[in-house]
Image (cartoon, rainbow, N blue to C red; front, top):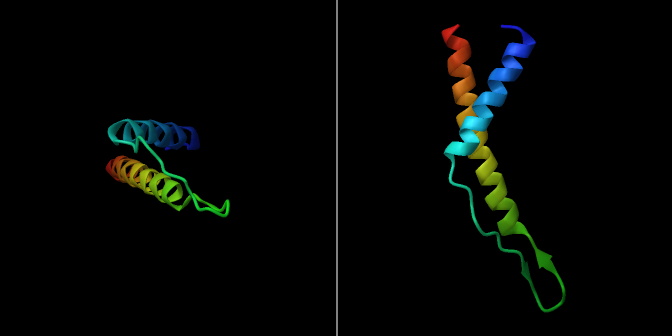
Length: 68
């Protein structure tokens, strides 16, 4: 496989994985009375979502490469 083929395969698999996941609809950013904002829930939700997408896409890419 050429570099272009691999790049195309990775893009296709990432797009498929993104569409297959149910993404969080709401993110909560909390602020306390002193003006401190905590985006930990937002960060954790986004990180979890991206890790699931990446795992699914990488599994698909590696499966395709092993077949060839």
